[in-house]
Structure formats: structure tokens, C-alpha cells
Image 1: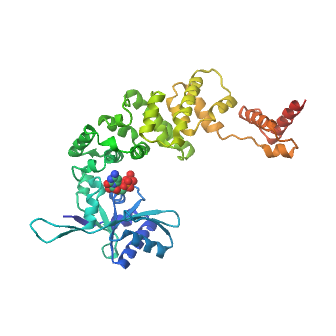
Image 2: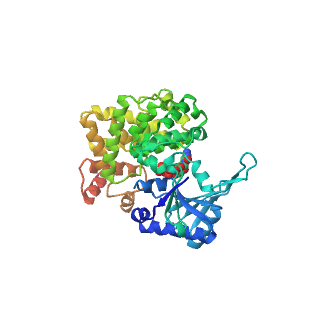
Image 3: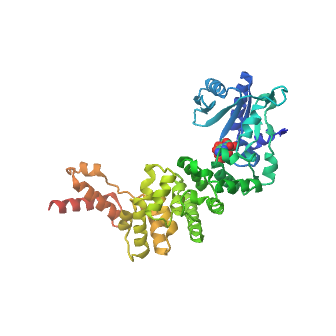
Length: 433
Ligand code: CTP
């Protein structure tokens, strides 16, 4: 039996007015079509736990695609639908997305020719999900707006801080759930339940991951590495002996744990310093995970994870060149700004941050932070256009002059536009002499 209570106060208190209004609008469309509609999954879990979550997942008992289309028609937005799955995504004008799924009524012939049993389609939909904490639903139709439905003890498990599967075949159905269990456990400071833990051990023993595509494995790992506590999660993966599914030689010993700690510090510093997290956090973590691997081992891991070719430079050329840079940064006595700039500008942010995490000496740390905070964004004031206006014939001289002016600026030898112009004129005259 479902545990039912009102969550409308919680919704009013924890949802911003705009989102609350949107939920009501969704409910009104369901009412107009005579459908029962619910918010489900991670959104409800996070609402109950007061965690921020703006991913709306709606389940409609009936035709979810028709529901999404009607909503879009009334509110002037777009819909992408997948008829084979009965799912749709509503894309609001501002880009906000709402996932919609259809739950269909299912009929079960019970034994001994008793009448056919009709099971609530919502309940069946929720039963197919990964963990109890993800199985709550909140009705959004006007008449029962905010009714929280909990069939499988989600609230009990949230109180007990436990991640539990709903049935013994959960990891057989979908082995990626093993990684999800670890991610949720670490994110919320929960523990994986005893039976669930045994099922994970069994999944490892029976190698359920053999047929898991690299793409899916990679996307789960990426989520883990981008979540708040990747160290705890990787430690758990190591504990369950899951790392060898990425590469047989992958480990998480004390040295690598230290490296992860250091990566964490660097990323926190970077994000605070620049208020910018547009770089690929997961890639920095993967560099740490693969630290100590030779190129063949990295090759095999990238292949297993089906990591797209566009990321390969980072793990091949940049990794190798980064290593050489770090060697110089640690050892060379004097590196002037322009040299530092020329050395490091070829590396992407992900590698620079990884090098900073690896740097041992004060010198290397100072040099890397100087590059990131002071030098990386430096540009000279004059440009190719200025040279053209000066009547200089376009050719290799442009690059020579612009590079020299930039070097002079980096090394504090020019300050104003006039300084730069004077230098440019001198260089051009020298070249012509
Ligand atoms: N789900 C599942 N098995 C999976 C992936 C997802 O059963 N392998 C279910 C879960 O019940 C989940 C819902 O589908 O609540 C939506 O999935 P997703 O958006 O990936 O997860 P969230 O729970 O919203 O988690 P997150 O906060 O990380 O997005």
C-alpha cells in the first residue's frame, strides 16, 4: 500500500514561485485531458531532502506525448518526442526542459482464472526504477495537487539514509545502477544497504559489466567524477573492485588519493578565483585516475570507455607535453613571463589544472598560478589592423612584430599603446634595414 501525505506546503516552501506556477500549469493540462499526472523521481527525492533540483520528470497515466504536445500548444513551446518509448521533452521558450513519460495500465491474469488484475500504471512505472529513494511521486492535478505517493518506503529509507534497490534483479536489468548507487550514497552521505551491497558484490563477481557499452560506463563515471565527492566515490568503486572494469591495472592507493585531494583543492581554488566552471571537470579527474599509466594503458582505458576522439589530444599529446612542462617548471631556475606564456599557452585549462595539482615545488605552483591568473588573458593593444593602418605590407613580419610586442608586454617592458607602437616601429625599421 502506498504511503500518502500532502506535500503541497513543502512545494510552496521549497519551489520558487515560477516553478510552482509551471507545475500547476502542467496539472491543468492533465485535468483538461482527463489524465492523472505526477512529478516523479530525482526531483521529488531532492524536494523531500531539500536539495536543489530543477529537473522536472513528469509521468502521465496515459499518452504522455499527447499531453506534452497539448501543453506546448497552449504555452507556445516546442516538443521532442520518442514514440517508441512514449516519452517527450517539452522545451520552454527560455530553454527549460521538462521530461514527460507515459505510464500505461497493465493487466495481469492472476492464477486460477480469477478476474484480471489491473495494476496502477504509476506504481508499475515506479517499481521499475533503480532505488527506493527515487520512487516517490507527487500528483499535480488540481484536485489532488501536492499529494505525495510513496509505495516502496522511500521516506523510510531517506530517514535511514539508505540506498536500496527495489528487487534482486535491479543490477541485472541495468548494471550502471551500481555506479549510480555509489554516486547517490556519496552525494547524500547515505550508505548502501546490506542486501544491495551484496547484490553489487554479486554483480562484480558475475561480471555484469562485460556487456555494458563504453559509452554508458563513461557517462556514469563522468557523473561520479563531476559530483561533489569524487574521492569517496572512487574509493567505494575501488572497495567493490569496480576499477578493473575500466582497466585491469587501475588502482586507488594512497598516492592517488593524495593526488585526488590535491585536484579537489585546485578545482575549488580555480572555480572561486575565476567564477568559471566551463572547463571539463571530469577530464581533470580522469587525468588523475590514469596517473602513472603508460600510453598503452591509457589507450586501453580510452578504448574501453569509448571516449570520443575529440578528447584524445588531452590524454596523448597534452599529457606528454604537460609532463615535460612540469619537469621544467619544477627545476628551471629562471623562467621569464614571456617564456612561461609561450610554454603553457598550448595547454588546455584541464591539463594546466592537473599540472597544478601535481606540482610539488613552490616554484612550479607559483608559475602555474601566475600563468592562469596573470598571463593567460594578456593581449597587446595593437593588432594586425594597426599594422595595416601603418601601411605595413601583410606577411610573416606581422606575426614577428605582434609576438615581440606581446612578449614585451608580458615582461613589463611596454605599458601604453604608444610604447607598443614605438617598439613595433623599431622592429619594422630593423627588419627593413
Ligand atoms: N533510473 C533508473 N535506472 C537508471 C537510471 C535512471 O531506474 N539506470 C530512474 C531513477 O529512478 C531516476 C530516474 O530514472 O530517478 C531519472 O533518472 P536521472 O535523471 O538520471 O536521475 P536522477 O534521479 O534525477 O538523478 P540526478 O539527480 O543525478 O540527475
